[in-house]
Image (cartoon, rainbow, N blue to C red):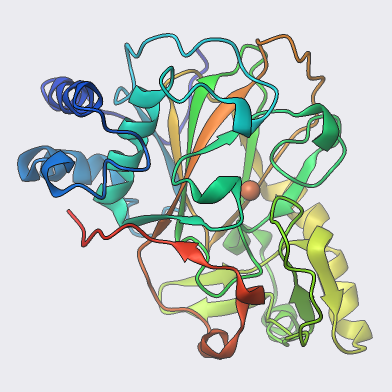
Length: 326
Ligand SMILES: [Fe+2]
C-alpha cells in the first residue's frame, strides 16, 4: 500500500461502530439509493459525530483520503464492463457505507440523466467509452476538470472510493490556488467567456439552449475557486487575451498537480470548487480485474458566483433524497 500524505485513518471504535451500522442496514434491505431516504436507516447521531472530524476537510485543505471506514467489506465480484451491469447486492455494503458517509458531509444527490439517477455511481472502464472524456474511459487521460462544471448546482464535494485498483492507476488532483496565477490572469479568467455543456455521460440535453458564458475562476471568501472542463467548453465571445491565459491552465495543472494512488477501501474527498481532478490513461483488460471506483456527489452549499443563480444548467435535474442532514 502506497503512503499518501493527506491521509486520515478512522480507527476503532468508530470504524467498528460504522461497519456494524452498515451491516445492519444492508441486512434490513437498504441499498445506496434507499438508505438515506428511510429515517430509521440513517447514521446514529453518535456515529455521525465521531466520523465528522475525519471527513470534514480542514480549512484550506482541498482534499483528503479517508482510510479504515470501508475495511473488511465482502469481495464485490469481478469488475463489470458497464455501470448498468453492476451486481447491486454484491456491492450493497460499499454503496450503503458511502451514502451514509456522504450524509456526514452534506446532502448526497444524483442526476436524473446520469447512471439512472442513482446516488452511488460506478466508475469503471467500458469498451465503448475507451476514448471519450468520461469516467468510463481508459486509453485516453481523463483531462483536468471540475465535476459537472456545466451546472450551477454541481457538487460541492466529490467522494471517490476505491473498490479495486490492482495497477495503482492514479487519480490526479490539482488546486487552482497552486497555479500561482497573477492578479491580472485572475481578472482575465473571471470574464464569463466560456459556455460549459454536460459531458457525454448525460442523456438527452442537446436541444438548442442559449449559451451562457461562465467565469473560469472566482473568489470565494476563503479561496480562489475554479470551474473548468475544457473538453466541453465553447467560447461565447471572441477574447484572445482570455484564450491565451486559459490555454496555459492545463499545463499549469500538470505542473502543480499530483497523483493519489488509491487502494481498495480508500476514500478520497475532494472540494469540487478549489480542486480539479483527472486520471492518467491506462490499458483496460475487460476481464473483471479492472480499476473500479464508486462515486458520490455531495451538496453542502457554500458561496458561489452570483451569476450562477440565473443559469439553466441545461435543464439537468438533480435527484435529491428527502434528507435534512446528520
Ligand atoms: Fe470527474
